[in-house]
Length: 225
Length: 270
Image (cartoon, rainbow over all chains, first blue to last red; front, side, top):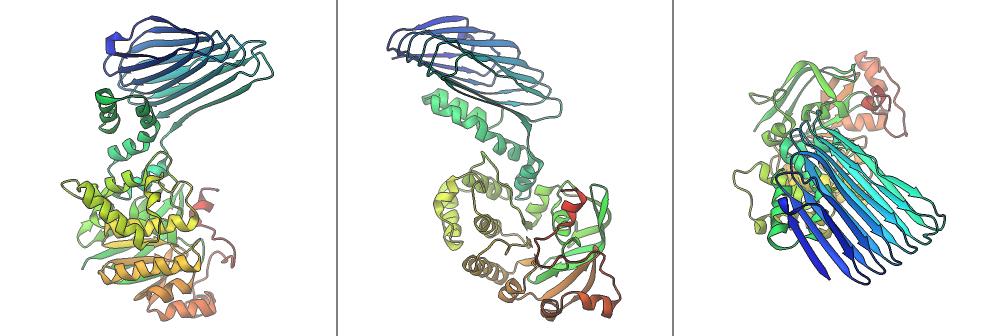
């Protein structure tokens, strides 16, 4: 198993190959500048790619993660959790190509759009013809925190084979007034209430990190963005 | 002992006036039963007192002693000593119950409570309310039964120690055992000197918590106030006597036996 952890400017264009039966764990974290990187991953038979990105960066641009499942029983997962603040304009494209039968992929992206920022989740999960018994899922959710913020979720499923399992959900929502009222009515101030309501969306990403980096991400999530 | 003074309170929801001049005093150390037919503004009064954004005060005043309540934000009202046990507590996905309780307790303290102190306080309260302690790790009210949600409201009341607690149909959705647990907890809080304003449709709850005062809300106003004998009278005779004795026509018919038609829900077209 190989582990690759990249932080801040270390996140650059990458071409990765996961060899037969190998596992690649990729952990990304950004706190300052948004990485406009293109990450391309190719996975051979029984190879596993396990990727996560905790993103609290600011800036403009597009980051791409393209995964090609080239061999049978190849597996890929990608979990993004992040925030966009100030006047950031961030687009996250997580795309999967199922190019062999019996291939599996799960993409999850959770974000909070604040201030005047714009956050977009795009990406296509494509099961090509003949790639039977493949499974793919795309989940995307953005909470729009402030009036000036924009969230856009448009993940796409392209399925050219019948014998597959595919699922897909995309939600853009604002914080519920009733939920806020409930927390406020217990004496919790507005800033803390909003933070509590968003913790649940971001916290699951912590499971992918260890040690100091995990602590740093946790404090970013808990003490404000 | 503080007094909550409500004077000529007018409240609109979605442009429709529901409270049309409510005047009522609620006392710390006493329990006031707020009764009246469905759809006449009882819940509206409670939500407006707590500061729900949909409930717009157009006229009147609310003071807790000499503190103007209406100028305060919702969280400030809570810290001042008001508490609302909601009729329909929200299910809040992603918010862990223990994190929520910790934030609420620490909101009214200068220094955050120690973890040990917090957990022992929480454990005691869960035990007293007959809620399994494991539920503190679950998301707030998510997947709780109706009865569990109501117990959880009283659990918060116990932990937050308000001066005046507003209870909106705390007994609805409770089975007989749960009503005993909830009313025992209320009696205990009464003995600690807390004030209560309690909305319920059932004399059974009032029998268990013995209100000192009773106020009857008709047409968005308090039509009559009195002692506990008013609850008995309404329980046996309904509200018809209001018309004959006081000359107040009840604007909407009470839908007996049906689930409450809430004035606000009606105004919002829900």
